[in-house]
Length: 82
Image (tube, rainbow, N blue to C red; front, side):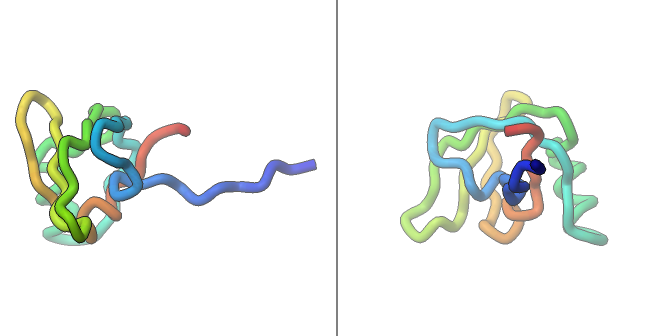
C-alpha cells in the first residue's frame, strides 16, 4: 500500500520559533534570482522570528542576518524533509 503523499511544506507554513532547511527555491525570473542572491539556497537553515498580524511580512533569520519576506515569496521556498 502506498502512503498518502502530503503536500510539500513551505517557509510560509512555519510559525515563529520554528525552523527548517531550504529544499528548493521556486518562482521564476527575477524573483527566484533575488531569493537565491539573498542566501535562500538549498540546504540553508532558516528560523522564523516574527509574523506580522495578517501574516505579511514574515521575518526570518538565516546566515547570521534577518530578512523579511512577503507571504507570496515565502510560499516559493519549499522545505527539505518533514
